[in-house]
Amino acid sequence: MIPILLTASVDTRGMSGAKFAALEREKMYVDTLNYYIDDLSKRDGSFELVFAENSGWNKKSILSKLHTTENVYIEYLSIDYNLFDQKKGKGYNEMLLLDIASDQSFVIQNYGAFFKLTGR
Image (cartoon, helix red, strand yellow):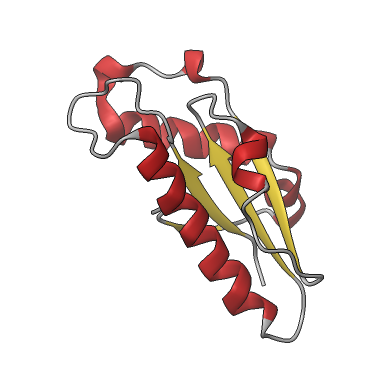
């Protein structure tokens, strides 16, 4: 199965139109990741999830809350938030995040493709 890519901005840094506080958003992302980890762990085969986060949020805070299993690998990408321009909006920055994640992810480069899911 090709890898699943989930994108995230835990801390929206005041972006216009963004909803929920950073800790609420972190919980939503953790819950989503755990949903996929739990679902995939019940299936035959091995699976890879790429989590690309672009706000500089504490990586350990998220990873420490994730379920572990032998057949689901998580690649966590911390993308420098200085690369993003809040004035250009969420859509522009989402596409930029997809481009950067594609370039930086060993997993995506190995497969040459990914399946994009919403992070929350």
